[in-house]
Length: 65
Image (cartoon, rainbow, N blue to C red; front, side, top):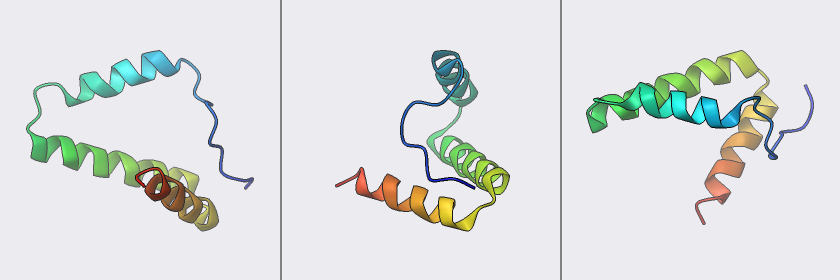
C-alpha cells in the first residue's frame, strides 16, 4: 500500500460528514463513542496495512499537540 494520505480524498466529503453526524443523532455520549470506535475498527480492518495504520495513529495524535 502507498503512503498515508493526509490531504482531502473523500468523494462527496460534505455528504459523508452529514451522514456521519446523522449516525450520531439521538445517541448517548457512551453510544456515540462506541460507534466511533466500531467505525474506526471497521475502517482499520479495511485498510489492513499495519504501517499505514501506525502512521495514521501517529498523525492523529500529533494533531492533538
